[in-house]
Image (cartoon, rainbow, N blue to C red; front, side, top):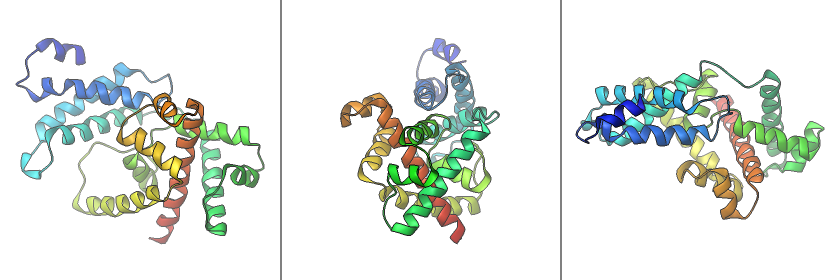
Length: 238
């Protein structure tokens, strides 16, 4: 579908003007997915999202079309991915165990849980713990939207429009999530910023921080699980 749109040429139609946005979002998501996911499938789903965005966009809402379309495109791609979960149950169990260990350690000490502390609490070596972090970083798509959806529904987010009540809940959650990110250890916070805000890949971030790509993957995975542990604590207070 993307190739067909490109052949049309011109730039008067928002679909044609923003076809490249679909490709850019697809490749950025692909960096976080296992090799079984094909970029062509993401692009095809993204083009559907772009068509929906073009039909539903209201300029009076205040957002630019590119911002609105980007949300719909990404949501449509994730809708396509969510139909199958490629992560083994054993890996999900390990994620939950790490998240709970981080939560427990940080509640008891009042400080950021360190790699060695979490590994010791789980009764595993550092190398095994670091592999769990790598798995957590690469096996699922995590973002502000997906972590919110998982906490509320146990699923990845849909591209459907929110109701007013859902939007309010989302705003409250976003505020708490932003607070959790701000209190990450400095290096983890920097990795999250470079990855999600600047859209750099792990190799590029590793070059900036002068560490290996594998270490960046570990830091990213630990940041995600640390945030999930802190947000699960918030959910229990609601």
